[in-house]
Length: 375
Image (cartoon, rainbow, N blue to C red; front, side, top):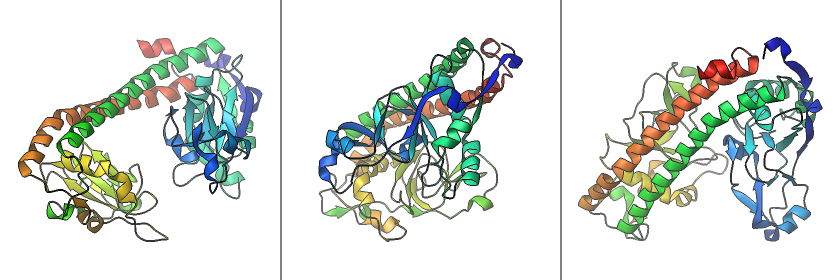
């Protein structure tokens, strides 16, 4: 189909409904931990929503302004910290949503729901720019979304584009699920070999002390491909050199996610974080599983009211059992193939994401067709 055959509309002309939700009273325990999924804006960091971090009860749904979005709806973060605002996800489940999430339901007689998802997910910077210029609080409104222009081909072409991109996303999701299961296997082995690991009279500091990273501001980073690990869940920027060796576990030092434990299969620049890498120990995987298993315990150790912190000293004083060096080494040897597979899958995921993100704007601009892309 020629680009000249594509037609331009306002999004509001092509959808059945658009709405935001609300939050049940957090002080009322009768409203929470029920059977109903409830989505917050931060969870839109995931492209596909298969499960939510929190659930509510029927009473919570009935006694609040929350509304239920349906499987197949596109959801967007209308507000939130950091990079959250403007993130777009696709619902694979029915879920109630909070006031900082907008649900958009396509009129599937004219607009394919997945095509809408890919279109909006490619317009992150545009969404943030529109909200910055039109809203005092910098939030995205349903009115803004409805007034956005969208160019679409005929429905069959929309579906062909969406199916091609979805096939790539499916491979990515499958690899992520495999990695999740591989890490569960490593955790299971750990629990069998080191039961009650947090109940001993020794401390982690008797065996290892994480190193402090070296702060690197985004404005000082030199363009490169090395992730800079600071206080967030994702890299703060990318640099041209690393200050760690892989594999390396990092522990975010400051902010709302202070204490977040992550494992990297490539060298990174540890900035506002501490780390344990192969220059410190051969048993990085052991310490990663140990600390990840105790993630909530680490979060609970945060100090500082305005700006929470987790430093190496907080890790050092965590209790643990007496650890045999031989046993720790045997664990590392046993799980290394699992984590190496995870690392290979992460690399493949990155390549697939690059392919998808390269094709997406070309499809949406009509620069190439699905047939051309498959050749």
